[in-house]
Length: 246
Image (cartoon, rainbow, N blue to C red; front, side, top):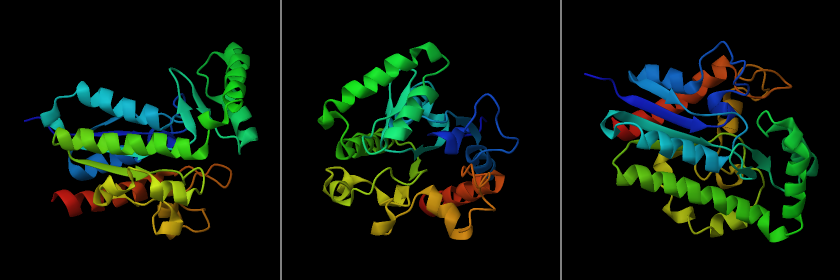
């Protein structure tokens, strides 16, 4: 009899920050799958946003026999990451330097396209209503709700979580969001994600046991989870899975 499959989607906190040079330690999807006695598929890729994370998950589910899926997890990224075909941009007027960095950093391998990407961002900034923080929030919340609905419609066990801290503190927009009251908080680890509201991201999950960010992070310069950090994330997901599905 075939083992169940864990499918995980996310950004660098799920798929690693450098796909061409992966770390020597396992990431949390592999660790969690071993704890659960499952096989796993990790479709996370560093630097990508929530539309990409959602699309990767749904595409993988569509190509996988539903009866074999034992658990799906989306570990979501920042609100201000916009995904196009091969590109991901940070579209947020409050972070100009970050946007210039991203324009060159996440354009796949086609560096000659950089100028075009910068012009694309500038054209968006000419229309402020296209890159408002509240709209970025809504784009992500719709993905959270859509993933939840997909799994519930097909009777697929699922969990969600937030990797990084939310991009901006926009609590009013968050509380007023139409999706706020329909998210299943039992299956969203750390909901409602903002510390100001009693929630947390995986960033805070690591900081709870490593407030100086020296034991569970790669380095002071690179605050991605290290091997022990991935163990901690897997442990948190395992505990929530056992609570809900056992």
